[in-house]
Length: 121
Image (cartoon, rainbow, N blue to C red; front, side, top):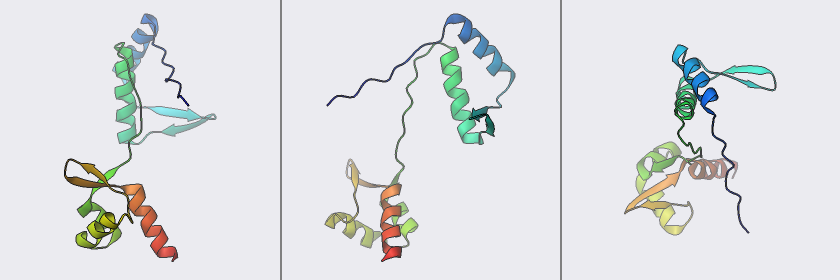
């Protein structure tokens, strides 16, 4: 099975110039979804403005999502358990773990799923 590569279309010179002019006048970004206006929160706004500015300069842009990775200390604090108990659970394979060098990282979604399972049990 193969995945199709993302279809990317660049902006023409006129579109780039118009976008650059628009961005120069404001950092306010409002998104319309099914005709309803949504004002973006500051972090999302900054990301969208950065993306649009790069497109206006003619740069290639790739957008992807990244799961939030926590240190074992952060994950243990979020779960309300000890760091040692969490490390033991990762050793036993009860909670998935990723390694960055010798450092363990745990996806926030995985620790939240474990918490939900504990609360429902």
